[in-house]
Amino acid sequence: MPRIIAITNQKGGVGKTTTAVNLSAGLAHSGKKVLLLDIDPQGNSTSGVGVDKNKLTSCMYDSLINETPVHNIVVNTEIDGLMVAPATIDLAGAEIELVPTISREVKLRNLLRDIHMDLDYIIIDCPPSLGLLTVNALTASDSALIPIQCEYYALEGLSQLLNTIKLVQNHLNTALEIEGVLLTMYDSRTNLSAQVSEEIKNHFKDDVYKTVIPRNVRLSEAPSYGQPIITYDNKSKGAEVYLQLAEEVLAVE
Ligand SMILES: Nc1ncnc2c1ncn2[C@@H]1O[C@H](COP(=O)(O)OP(=O)(O)OP(=O)(O)O)[C@@H](O)[C@H]1O
Image (cartoon, rainbow, N blue to C red; front, side, top):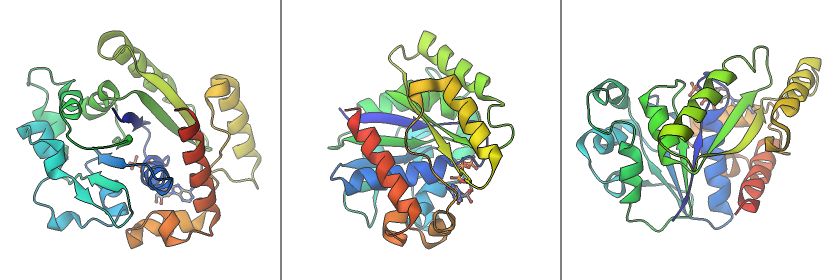
């Protein structure tokens, strides 16, 4: 069975997609077979690995709503060992269409139990909300990886996220763990980044990854070329740190 990790934080723009894309590529680079599963209707992970959303005939919407097997919607990427279960804006409708359905919180778990693919990891990019799509991701996952931006209000909303994780653990997925907390967009020139990082380490202790993701322009450029950082610029600091993160995630095995 693959290890399933949900990249989640209901706060927008904290580095979920950047982490989902580059951690997936880093794991694939280490020889693992990885499925990047995009359940964010923005579909930025999908385009971030070079898939043209306009050319897709099916996406995670069809799996969640029409029960199309996930292996039927999967698309290959240019990275060896990395595939993507894509998202398009259609998925925005799934959040609402799931509401009146039976077993609405376990749709994704059931789909992934039936996945006929030889995989080591499934990395799920969650939307910036704590709605049904995120609950489906947490219910289907072994663990949650929480990116936190080293910014003002970084901790705001975290208690809500941890509460949702607790609720899922209590009612839907007792095995769900915290995979780790990842500090993102760290700016070593500011006291603020250092302060936020201290505060998060005090709170999450050993759950915080040693790898800290700095602000890196190459990381923000790579998506417009449809490439993970390791192919866009493998000499960049961004590539170095995401490979380091992949090593930390692999060490948990
Ligand atoms: N380490 C970094 N250095 C510089 N820019 C970054 C870094 N990480 C992310 N970004 C940029 O910040 C923006 C938000 O990042 P990203 O899309 O990964 O966040 P997100 O949490 O997935 O957002 P959303 O909540 O909208 O899904 C993007 O433009 C991205 O390119």
